[in-house]
Image 1: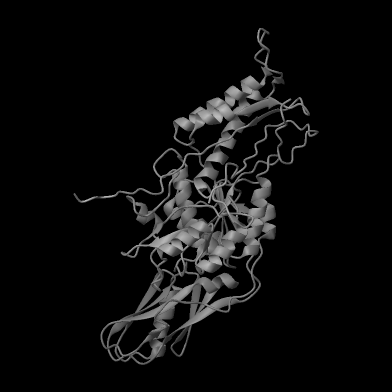
Image 2 (image 1 turned 180 degrees about the horizontal axis):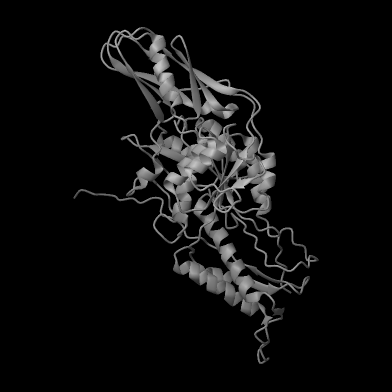
Length: 506
């Protein structure tokens, strides 16, 4: 007698009709399609935005649309996390459907920091204040006092209406205050720089320095309840704390179970130390989550995650196309650096090869810094790197999750189209008359699965498909005779990570 093939959460006594899919990752031996899925951005709005927080989605087909930067600025406030995430995503990818959900801002304290202009100028020149990767500039005329110079800079800074800070001036001390309350403001980096010879004044700090004193985290609990029944290819969160990110991944994992079938993934960023990023990624340890990391980056995590998601979805719309699966060293190909456009940290921080190796062993997608000041995505991976406390890299490559989810979607659709409304029966014995077209037997369902496997293999998305077909199990369940089940040992294609050449001089 054949053993039962169980589906998590679908008991043998459950008789609700439907076509159910369970995608299980890391099922092999342990070792150390073309479609567009929408993306959801989650972050805070400022009080200047008109969006309803936590409970209302905004996108291309919602009651109040969000399809342009002007609409995003009006809904979320131009200085907000969410409007800036929208900007970064839409600059790269205008094809993938994009939705936004504003999370209620923290009730705590906004981060702040200062740039100090020291003395009266003794020559003409100019001064810049950097906020993240952007800067504002003001002219200096010989004889300008510190207060005058700072006032001109404050005007220039506040004219940047989409910056995440506002500025004020007290006797040459420029105070920059995050537009949103909470600890994520502590990730915004600022500095000053004087241009010209013999100007006679200084702007400090001259090295990128984070804002401070931002306190009290926000909460995404209510926002997550709003999207619990909705499906996105990726949920991109501005959160950087284990509590909020853990809540997202817990919900995603639960909703991916067969009785719900909402399969999606989360992307978040980190600019923290490697040790702290490792703690965060390994704590999440999920095939449905990705952490993009560059220590001390001038791009805050929310915007880095939005850029990564835009890149991934731009290419994943055609998995069989160039870069559809393999994002190794992304930023080095034609046009890729323009799309990615994350500059090297102005602190001079450069991850070593040992850092990159450690990141890849601990569920982190690391960003490398090139000599010319550009950056590249080293290798795109999931945070799933541990089986308990033991390293487990069976689902390290994020493209394998994507292929499994896509295959699950496709085989389910094929099942709905070809099996719905039919009767169920057993395969006829040798010499017996086969049942009619309205009766589905294991042999019929097996043919459906094999056809889909062959289609994926022809598009170079699967490997060893003949072995998969040989190991494929399709059977009518004994305990639940109205249920037909298939277990498919899917083997997504591997990507080329390394190549080597040994050159021998003769």
